[in-house]
Image (cartoon, rainbow, N blue to C red; front, top):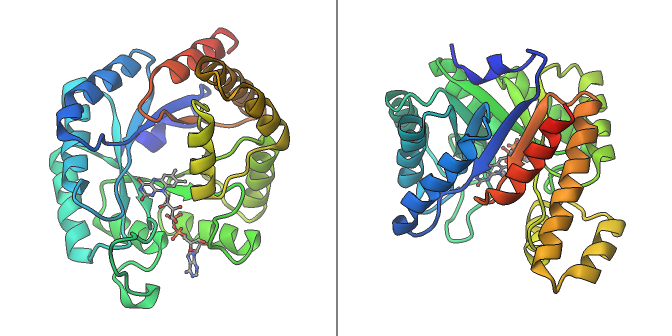
Length: 290
Ligand code: FAD
């Protein structure tokens, strides 16, 4: 039985941290030191993202194994299926089992820019749901799936997107982690609609502390999240002062998290961007008021 889904429902918020693999192999040891530092904040688990294409994928799995073995924190590996065959995913799952990685964030992934991708009906995994069903059929993994409070950018409608989420959960998703968002109303509305549709699994909000204005604009353009007008106005004023932007990000994310937890969110998944400072400070402030 996989470990992570059992963390939910115990009355205390489940905090988790997301990291990405540094591009340069020589940066991995420094990266692992950063993860070790954040482990002192006692996350229930950490996750490591996975490239939809490209060469870093093997290294990602190896590094997830190192986080689990050397740092001793529960680790979930993200897996994207858009460019993988069933045989490749089966081999990756064997490898994860050998590394004692018991949890996977199961995703379709975005179409890589540098690679041709067959249309959904002509590849082994058309959508994340197919990956979820395949992994479940092998057994032995807890599975998170992605949810979109502001609707996935390719979706034809919020209702259709939610019904796709329902499919992923029905196929074996144990919990949902949301795309980043900055307006809690989007999350609460999304959860309400998901519950009305019969999705009962934990829906964990994904929160990204802002650490730079241009980076924020880049990320939100990529994933389709909106920057609220008031937030834009404040960031426009302070954008030339990097320290002020970081402080703003910490204050904003702390307020967001506090309200989310007060109103029933099961925890918070932090998009750490491999930086420890903002996440550390937000968690310290939150724990003072829990
Ligand atoms: P799906 O659930 O397959 O949905 C994709 C689109 O297809 C949606 O618009 C959905 O409505 C639609 N759809 C689903 N099923 C059907 C169907 N049967 N027929 C028609 N339409 C359908 N990307 C990475 O590359 N690496 C990562 O590590 C990574 N981690 C992420 C972690 C989280 C928590 C989140 C929220 C996103 C992450 N992403 C990552 C981004 C993700 O890969 C993209 O958002 C991707 O475009 C969709 O992946 P998905 O798993 O949500 O896809």
